[in-house]
Amino acid sequence: HVIAENVLRTKVVILGAGMTGITAAKTLHEEGVHDFVVVEARSELGELSSFAVPSQFALYQLLFCSSSGGRMQTFTLENGINVELGPNWIHGLGRLPSELNPIYSLAIKYNLTTVSSNAEDLETFDSSGKINMNKDLEEVSSAWERYLALAGHRLDNEKADLTARAGFSLSAFKPRNHLQEAAEYFLFDFTFGQPPEVTSFIGAANNNNYTRGYGFLVQQEAKEFLNASDSRLALNHVVTSITYSTEGVQIQTDKHLTIEADHAICTFSLGVLQNDDVKFYPPLPPWKQEAIYGTNMATYTKIFLRFNQSFWAESEFWLYADPKRRGYYPIWQPLDLPGFLPGSNTLLVTVTDTEARRIAKQSTEETRAEIMAVLRSMYGKDIPDPQEIVYKNWHSDPLFRGSYSNWGASYPFDVFRTLREPLYNRLWFAGEGTSTAFFGFLHACLKLPLSLKSTDGAYLEGQKAAKAVIETLQDHTTGEEYHHHYKEYSKNQDFNGFSELRSDSLNELRQLIRAGDKLVTNAKAAVN
Ligand SMILES: Cc1cc2nc3c(=O)[nH]c(=O)nc-3n(C[C@H](O)[C@H](O)[C@H](O)COP(=O)(O)OP(=O)(O)OC[C@H]3O[C@@H](n4cnc5c(N)ncnc54)[C@H](O)[C@@H]3O)c2cc1C
Image (cartoon, rainbow, N blue to C red):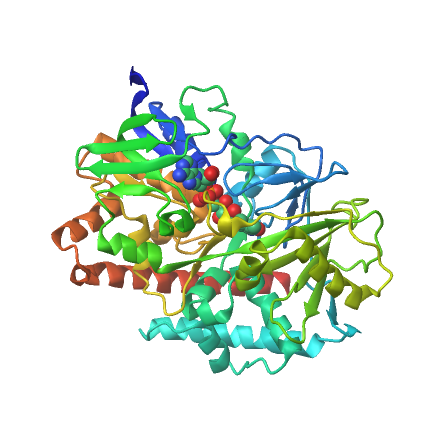
């Protein structure tokens, strides 16, 4: 690749070695395109250091493993236990053999242990101690059923999107007290990372309809074709600028490396793009900027507390309803339960959105004091202090700027497609944020009708972009949907040219919601 000092030349440069970047590289490799370079700011490409040390759990399935790569980051506590600072949930496995969740297939391939998790195994508290919240939890979940039906109906009738808060109100759920607020948080914010006020009514229903998953195992897959000493891997290089034209792309890094390529696949998070951490030359066109700024980047912070002994209830989840503040250290998970991390004496408490951003600005000591006050209201004054507290502030990390994307309130539905859209068929965009059904997540597990193939999950976004690049390398007139829409944009770079795209997007979304409803109905029938 080296054509001059500090200058590389390649066919395809992949920007970022998270789930999307690795999947894109693997797809190129499998399709016979070996002339690529992967650029990553961090020092590691997902090294699955050890499968022997269990780390964490998932909502329906737990994959015991330690991993890293992109947002998948592991931290080893002082007692040697690995915990995942980033994703850990798999929502749904699919069915054997052909419709299996791709990540679950990898879990089987690498012989990982998994364990089911049960969100109904829940204890509830407020500042006065244990409290019964069954009625509140039931109310919000039956409102959620109505919410989903209303969202589908809204889309079918071509009504504009609203906020998820409006969706709840229309579904006759208006949280009246801190218990109902906490119940709503458990159902909603814990998934979307943001409150109903700033989340799309229809988007939340769309995302909810699908099973989602945890995909760290792709990092292990990467080892099959890429290792740390591979010359196609530029680790520790922060991309500072991307120059693109009809002729190709040029990437500059902070180590004064220049990479010239026919194509670039940019997999940086939406947060990174929103924050202008990377300069684009020429500046991104207005429609691309609208797509980037029009999508929310949620923050979801996991705080781990290690004690010298456990003193807590053995329920998988505890929900804390703070009387004064919604989302104040609301969801707790003891990690030392059988099948999880027995003997770890570790608790996990999760905070999101404004609380996560507030905590990012204070010292760890202040966070520890706040947490212990809450924990003492649950378990009494005599409980010990933790020996270790660990959390990562995703919001302030310049390589992520948040945890995952979320469709904002009153979302313009062409945005999820325009996010994905390439520039000049040279600079391609892929990542969790470009996925229609699985934005915010690593990958998908579902059986979609063939007509909806283009809407596969986030795990496949890298694959999809790589395939489109390969098509374009082979035949400049193809590139399928990417190319088609790009032509629309080139004709008219303002928003008038988007009507076809908008109606395509709406159709795609309608079909998704219907297919999702069917999946949910089938799943319920199977359970019954
Ligand atoms: C706390 C948390 C919990 C989550 N929980 C779940 C879950 O339970 N289940 C689930 O499915 N998903 C979950 N997610 C979401 C999931 O982690 C993401 O959807 C997924 O990892 C995104 O992968 P990606 O490759 O698209 O992006 P990333 O992982 O962000 O990859 C992009 C890469 O680009 C690199 N990069 C950024 N800027 C530059 C630059 N200027 N130069 C060079 N390199 C750069 C980054 O270092 C990164 O490696 C969670 C995320 C977080 C943070």
